Length: 241
Image: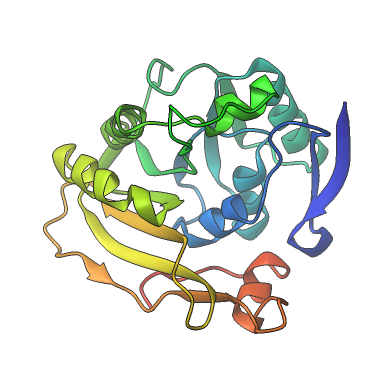
């Protein structure tokens, strides 16, 4: 069973499972931060029902996108969502990112990887558990595969919990896609960042830069104007600012 809804203030039709893993704001922020141009190709690992690719195509027309999703039901739903929005440049592969076949290098890659610890309490919903259950080894494998699929100077963008930053930085450096920007997402001003965006560039020599980041919520819990522009209006999130 699925529920029908919208993303980007109604600009995107989005259906997702009624139970199990349901999308938050992470894929919208991830899509907004990718420095992609019309005509370029992007690869996403762990596409789910496709929220990030849908938002990306709503912001930039003329893209070529490949989404990889291990769950066949979610992969079918992602393809259906792309069709419902008229996004003809999205291809969905039902496979593991570690083994999915690609016939070309990509200009960009992105992921909102699984991050719940492997020894944590399992979700009673199998699909949700698969979507969230991660490990250092899995994170490293995803980064290796995504980096390997990029052309020289292609970008890799990840949204991860703050606690996963060390393993991500290590894996990105090890697999020739060193992090050039670390961009914190502050829940409110003065609060510790729970999520960060990481930007890596294939074979880059640029030192990593710690950006000022984005404050998501006002003191009353509403979204800040900057966050609302991204989540509701479909604006880009410039990590280089």
